[in-house]
Image: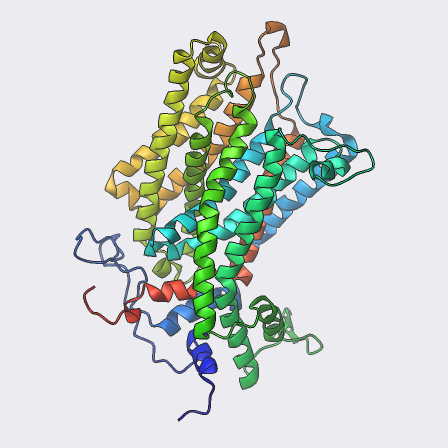
Length: 525
């Protein structure tokens, strides 16, 4: 009988450090085809969700290797570029705070433009991430294992980017705390009947629940990284930091702690004493399912509340009841596109990533983009029907003369860019060859991401740049501060995502192993 505690035995096996004989890896790509073996159309067969006939130990080493091993040079190049772009956003925000919102292209008529466009764009992406993960969890979709962790991380980073714009567009940033219902010396309370205040409560609540949902899902994997680092230290195989030198292997920095010592400390604190015991797993699965159940209606309500910023007004183009479901469908649509846009390049640059994110995963997400894109296209058409059926000449004029007609609408190009990217491009996925091609999927995902930004721009700017009186008509032209602030927010988002890839587990290990054949005792599939 072993003298080792059962919890420690389980920890060794789960962390991939126990002596498990790996299964020989087979070539995942069928020679002469673009099929990786997962595009099974026979309903009697279950497509594999992890390729290469890998053992549990292989999967652990692969996923943990992304956080433990040096990243490829392209990661460092991408990180340098994105962090530099993020620094531009910091400079633009400081310049705006010092100078005032006059540095934007706003005017008396168009007082919402790129700032709120960017806010709604990032909120939409942020809402989609947790919605994707939570709904697929509740529906027991096993293929979620390849995308749920990245989608949840994307949520947190997108909400961070979205939170920038409401704070700075008020002009006096140091008064932004007035949005919170806290006692102050002026006796001023927020207007609780305003949907703008509803946004504050809804988005902050959603950000808190999403952070808990993402963090709790990582606890077992953080414990795995902790145990692997501790075992390497115990065996004396942990390497220290080295300063790169022109010649030789580099100069060892003995005065600095070893990377594994830092990993043991940081991952140990973050894993909250996880021991892989049955009691821990039981409580973890129950709490995770509860958070998934809470997140799903919360996401639906939060993006509906964001749409109330426009739908509760009397401005033609905004005053419509279709906005809540329209915004929710658009959030799922744009969220899946962003996940694909981020994950498909990783299949090329990270080793064995394509064995975990297979063509079956990509095809499933392409089908959802086709479905939600059709719903968004239907919502675009219904806007015209509602404007016509309501017999409001101002409402119909917003769509006909401010958006569609190139002879009268100065922003017609933005509207037709939105239609092309959000309605036309996803129709390619009716054809199997296109929805099974990673390159075509990535191009469509890029187009949808662009189209969803233009959707928010069209909704906001084209509805308010022409008021009821022609004398109040004004055009909006973005300044370089508008443009660089948005580009900088994209840099912040990508920088945070690259750091996530380097220091945190990209996939949920336990969920990956559950869908592998070794976890099933029967041989039916």
